[in-house]
Image 1 (tube, rainbow, N blue to C red):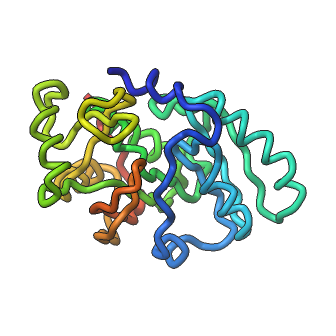
Image 2 (cartoon, helix red, strand yellow; image 1 turned 120 degrees about the vertical axis):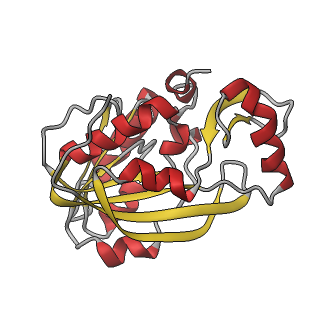
Length: 233
């Protein structure tokens, strides 16, 4: 199951997008910042930030979702002081110049990225961020105390080859239609992914709502770009 292809199956506002920005974002990110939103879907978060005066560029691999976002932006860009822009793009090779964004939002996005591509995604965020730019990363944590998740982590390991990666289905049940793969992270996994490119200033444990309405563990991380770039083998 290849997630890039799987993600394109969703139409417009059907694209899964449930996690809200934590208040830490507004405490750490200066008003008016120029923001890049990874996997923006139909722009749910981008439009909320626009109302607060931020300028947001959103990208997604799903062309239909981006068309939905662009259509709405034609109206909102005339209503608010902040502007939003949307484009179809792949997080592994962003079509943006070096050092042009103040902030990168990677929220409930790495959960859909395979293990071999995660550092590349973060290296692209590092590249497009200005010096001392801010990374806001929020994603799901492994929840072994929840019997349903525990069952899926163990059951799907034989398929995914990675503990914490499991198959998301349309009805949330084990025999439902397969939609995409998702990975839930440990704290150490996230620290390891960030250590070579970002200084972690905040690591906050919270609760997120999932695609199927479940409440589960989540992590919110604020990182600041380090001087040296990622080394991708």
